[in-house]
Each structure stands twice: as C-alpha cells, then as structure tokens.
Length: 83
Image (cartoon, rainbow, N blue to C red):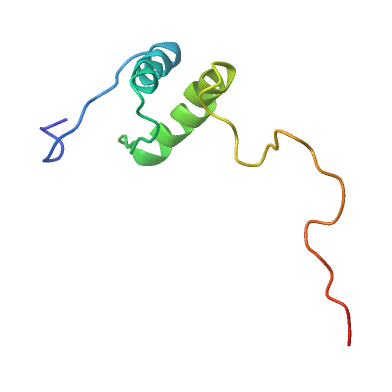
C-alpha cells in the first residue's frame, strides 16, 4: 500500500470470501466503517460489490441500503392539505 500512496493503510488481498472474513475480523473488534479503494477503481468497485458485499450480507455485517428490514405499505411522503 505504501508504494501506491502515502499514509497509513492496510491491504486486504484474497478471494471474495477471504476479504469478507478479514473485514468480519475487524467488525468483531468493533470497527464498523471502512474507507475502501482499489486500482483500477471501477473494476475493484464491481469486484467488491458483486463478490464481497453479498458474503458480508449473509454474515449479517452489511445490508443493502435499498432493502428495508420491515416493509412498509403506503405513501412515502405525507400529502400536504390545501388551505
């Protein structure tokens, strides 16, 4: 990591399952937020999103922001009354 950019950093290298397991180890220590980057950026984002995030979701460590834990029926916004 230090050869690519300066400052502190940790490289997580491995299969989707291996990277998910390393992140789970950090989560067990109470770390809940990560700043992730890879190179090339777009390809690494797809690699992580399509491979690692589903594993983290199965482990209960991540939930897709568009999925609700309790589906709610109804209108998402209140309708203002005309006066």
